[in-house]
Image (tube, rainbow, N blue to C red; front, side, top):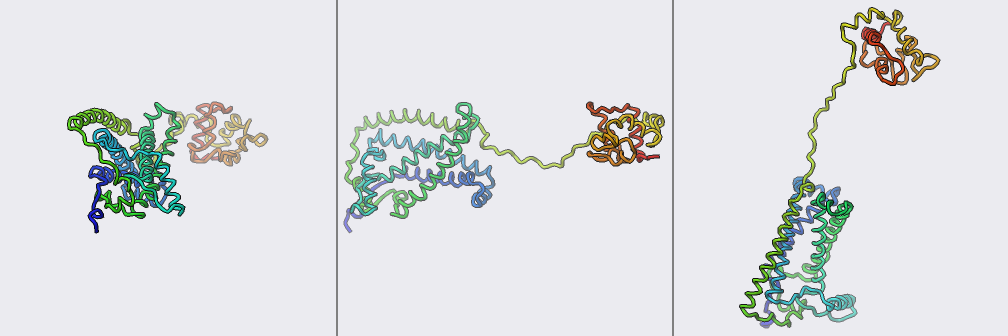
Length: 384
């Protein structure tokens, strides 16, 4: 085996690898806590939410992972600006027209039309597509997540219809991102070739020749005078420090501006309902005996006369309003459409004492008449 074959090439330094795995952990956490909320009726979602201690815990974990993702984005932005501005390394992740040609050549190679795969640089067009899709997806998730996390604040500046639209975009982009990782990313780094560079940081010379041959022939970054390098670092930290501070303040405001979306309304305490019936107002006990003695205590002595004079015009065998006849003793006990007008022994639920109390009812009872009928019903409503 030649010395060149044994040579290793640094592909991802430690900082890049740490960033990748933190970002990956945040992404997986967001997927495991977000999709069960979108498809909450699925058995696997119910099991996962239950295992995590309920939807309240799921929401908290989801939002913690979202904050981690935002912080990783701040770091990623600064790291890329540093290597581009301070170290003057080639921004090889930027798409170029060559990537379009490489994509077309790859399609023809996969179809058997071309005999050779296109030679690509440090990042292939597949990796660039995945990277920019990740950036775009993160932007969509952050913006739509803001609407869902802070709906009241969002509604103050944007139409209310944007909130359900943000919910649809958030869930749809989440599903698309998960499928892209499973189908696209996992295939390229685990199945097509098992790429260990994100674990070790290095790729062998043979792997580089196969996947990134043009990167082996790229000229190294030009050496920079220490004074120039120092000036660039100073300018970088001033600019990035300002941007990162604004970004960080925005994240804090994002998280703490309102709590409506993170709070679940607690289940109300179950208590036995108690709604006491309001007693029907009756004349005072002192007035009842006197009224009862004046009118009598049976239907035949005078109670029947009260019903006939006050109620008989509407409730008689000929007219029969509500199919109720109050001109006879039997008719009063039989009642009509609303049930018995007189229930012996129960004046509180006898409707003959209720209806005269309504203002729009034509028949009215005087207090003495009311007391006499009440006492008559209480005593069993005797006929004779």
